[in-house]
Amino acid sequence: MPQLSLHTPLGDLTVSEEDGAIVALDWGRGRDQEATPLLKRARDQLQDYFDGTRTSFDLPLAPHGTAFQRKVWNALCTIPAGETRTYRDIAEAVGCRAARAIGQANGANPIPILIPCHRVVATDGSLGGYSGGEGAVTKRYLLDLERAAPGVPTLFAAAPRTAQRRTRSS
Image: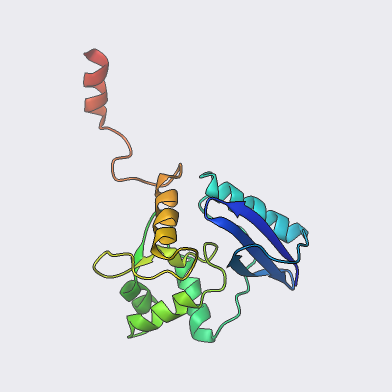
């Protein structure tokens, strides 16, 4: 299985390809490096993401998992960058009664970051778990990175026009 590693602010990551699609993103450096065109594209997009110039990915993904897990992972891909959803929100979106099952599917996600399981938080707003990197510290880093990216809406994106006029005339 072709793999390509890259250096990121979170340490080394390794992306793996199978049959023309990304099937895994692992923490750490892979032993065997093979720079296929798809893996180079994935590396470049991930580097842009960590540089803060990209918030979404245009890559074929084929995660191995159960039908339920793939349904959850598809729902995760609909969460916009810079936003979060609760485990309960995702459970409702996929027709599941147990938010805990969503947490388990998130933990089994073989392609973190590209399938943004870090965007799922607990109902009380706390981060919840994260199985990648250094856990909650990594999850917080990814959420903060996305919220700071250009083009991601912020609560106070611009001052009202009247305030701008006052500033100019004073």
